[in-house]
Image (tube, rainbow, N blue to C red; front, side):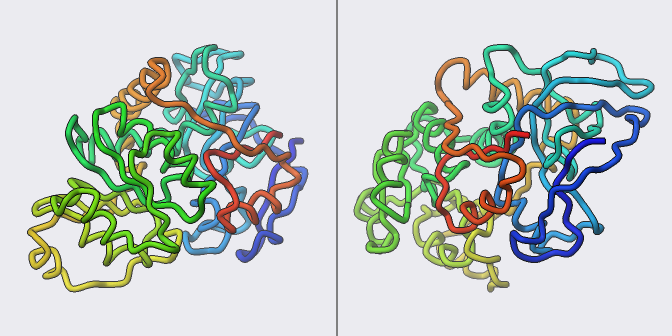
Length: 323
């Protein structure tokens, strides 16, 4: 038996309950991982609410880190006791879980379980956004919405390390300090300032090469006005709600813009891409270009409180569950 968070009906945080479950032996190609830390992400809320459908009942969570405790048939390259991290299918909100071996990445001792659990979804998201969706280079100007969030802080750090000028939007003075510390050269308080006008002023009318938008509905139209001709709008989240259907002609009217809605799982679908992305991320961490700040830790049984804080945007940086 192992303890896991189970959702029997979608809804608010209260639908998550801690239960004892019988975990089967790992199937062919699977590995059993004893979680030492579990990543908390906004996508977990979407699954809990039913915005992203999942068969009921289910255990939420897509990332974690821990040690290998059992191997299924046919598994090669992993041994019992290995330190691993993963971003995978649902099921990480648990003391132990079975994970496809293809979803596991070995982690060095220099990276803690907490950092590893927090780095997979957010860190690999930052990696593909900055290094593949739009390859940020020295001299670029990038706009990062929710710059004090989990992904936002990583985009600020890594963007600066790549030689870009980072402009961040945040909702409070406290978050502004975090974004600046992480590497944002300019910070805009979107609750009290018109971020479009500020971007125009900061860039002297040249605008941004790329906008990274994890907020969605409330920032979309303004974001398009912050992009230089033939620049790119990258939507990777919908914290304020999904972007409504829009007239694609807007992209030509505003300067032949590119717009994309990528997802991490497309970018790491091939094992070689997954390994290369993780290697690039761990190199950035080892160089000190990127640090994974853990700003909140919750016990597994306190998951309701954790989701309330996440939904209320009371968290900054990364948060983890400790089984």
